[in-house]
Length: 145
Image 1 (tube, helix red, strand yellow):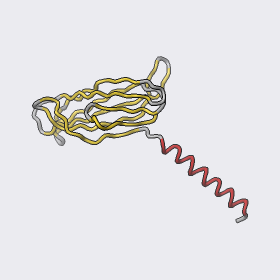
Image 2 (spheres, rainbow, N blue to C red):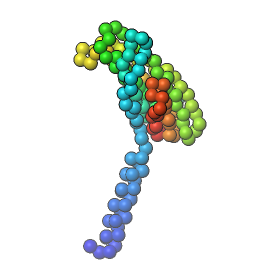
Image 3 (cartoon, one colour):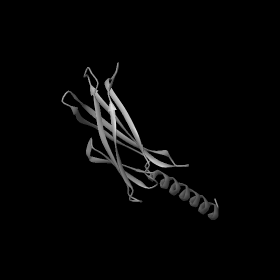
Image 4 (spheres, helix red, strand yellow):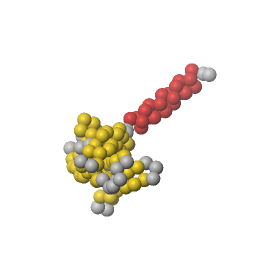
């Protein structure tokens, strides 16, 4: 292999690896592990959470936003329980912020007991977005829109 071919192959390999690393840096989703919660004196269980980039309609255009979801597992309670979690978000690049409640109502599932799922979408704009949930006070979800 001539020196020019070797240098060209090395340049292509370096350019390919650096462009791959740049796209791998942006996290389009994040998850929080299950934590114990008590929705009421007769409704306890655990909740996990996730967030991901999603398109949102803003007037006549589509922009990036964030979908935040909770998964509520009541266990073996023989009724219906509701869990409300407050999600607060901040866009670190623009300073925009907001919050909203997410309420999951458990329903019976033959295999898994009483489970509930709910989600909401926030219009966050582009940038790095940090989401905190009242169910996970010492944790945060961080994604890039």
